[in-house]
Length: 185
View 1 (spheres, rainbow, N blue to C red):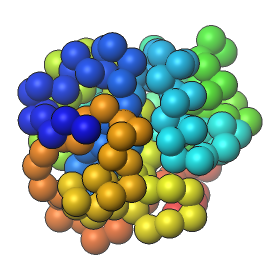
View 2 (tube, rainbow, N blue to C red):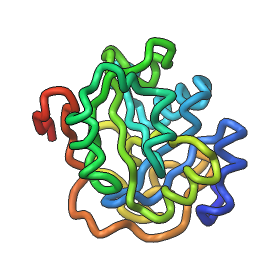
View 3 (cartoon, rainbow, N blue to C red):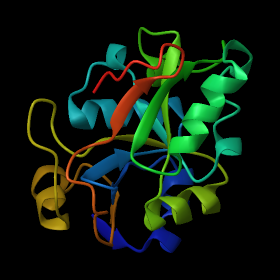
């Protein structure tokens, strides 16, 4: 497993690789959201059922618009999400009909976040699109908090881990339903 700087990892992702990377609170696993084979590998590595869906992290809102259906949200609902971004807030938003079921699972919505983490910002800017995000752990175990923990769980099964520190958040992002405003986590 390679250890790469955020500026060095886009080729791995574009080639269909699965990476681990630091987020605001824990290490995440990610891949190209437009590559179903990469998403399937990520789900297998994590032992996560596809039905649960995944999160997309982005550096700006324009990267999310190909995946979400803004027409199903009011101006006030969008303004509320924008008031929390970038930051540790994930919003559940209506999904466009052509989006892979591997991303949204059994739902007609998608979890999205504009990250304030500089490493995620850099990766997404280089890719020109969002990155799949799920905590770096086997389902049911605690998320990895260091490169050493990522290496212990995923050496030989993912292509790279991104160097850099975690953000200052003590827990994973707050999840909010964009339509109802209800806090889900």
